[in-house]
Amino acid sequence: MNYTALSDQELVKMYQSGDSVCLEQLILRYQDKITSYVLTFVKSRHLADDIVQDTFVKVINTIRSGAYKEEGKFIQWVMRIAHNLVIDYFRRQKKFPVAEGSEDVDIMATLPLQDRSVEESIIYDQILTDVKKMLKYLPLEQRRVVEMRIYEDLSFKEIAELTQVSINTALGRMRYALINLRKIAKENDILLSM
Image (cartoon, rainbow, N blue to C red; front, side, top):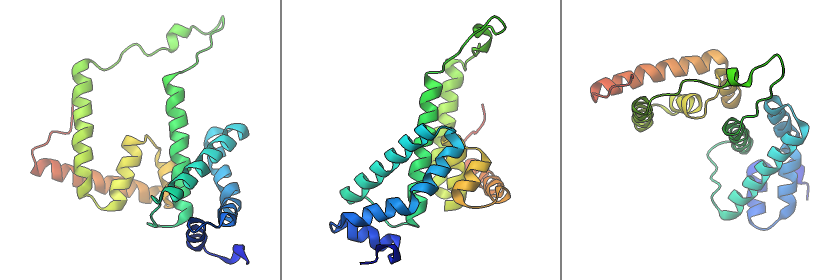
């Protein structure tokens, strides 16, 4: 059988039916693309390889469990998994930052001196919770941009690349999302500022 001629969906279905060669074909088809994408963020081949491996482990587990749903292109789904793993990696790095000092650099000067007060943190968390509830009323493209920007902490350049649109389109979607969120907040008497 010529596996290279099969579509991603056909390969996934055949893999679900027990043909492990189909999974190998999917990995071969996209491994370089995903590795290149991850490398743009992590700048380390070793780390990129680890993240790509973790990505395919998630892909395999999701397909095997029957949780994979064809809601778009297979590669976009895999790229989203890889992207989320990159974000997870950077979040872990922020939790455990490494600061190195020298005679010229005072480590204490690099530490943040002011955090939000308890009250500000509670208000901020409530605003994020309210926004999250309101997101379901936005069109999908607008909702996704807000989620990626606010909750996944992505830049507009990253959002544009991940959603395969121009930066201007990503910015436009965010602008319309904010307009719609303000309108929804006003109609429901929700305060969106601290």
